Length: 195
Image 1 (tube, rainbow, N blue to C red):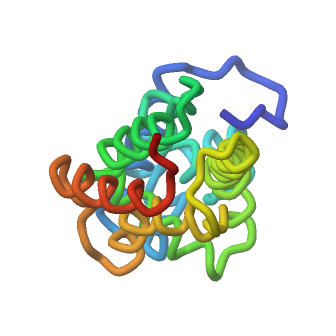
Image 2 (image 1 turned 180 degrees about the horizontal axis):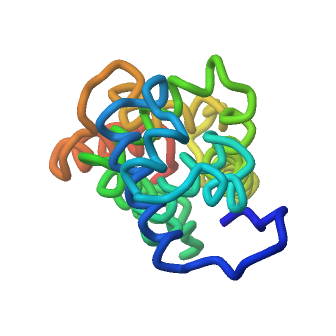
């Protein structure tokens, strides 16, 4: 949650919860283009000034609403096996992105193209931590000789995550568990060295 910039009356946790839930529902129903503080205030039974005490912009509210709806950060595993780590993380990510959460993220990814505030908020809270982990994990795998000869780490990351993010960007659904397992089998066979 973004820290309040305004002092004054104590904030109601019930009101905050109502705002986050209303914001998530509107983000899923209307996309980011149709997402507005006024609509969130009306749906949550709160005033716009209450919302602006907690969030500086609709972008920050949208990102907080997404994280509130997901209820947990994704794990970034470190089992000792790069292949096992990526399989676990991608399988968990796919499950998280199916349905409403995926639609909300897709709405924000589309909105980030035209809204620099959203791009920064989404980038810093969602994309960058996962990208940093993926690059660091893939780099360690390359240094340990766990990648097949000639595998470029950035290209490997694109192959691993592309099937999850591509449907979000083009209005499709994230693949189900069997499809995710099948594409991971093919991708991992081409990326990771097998003993």
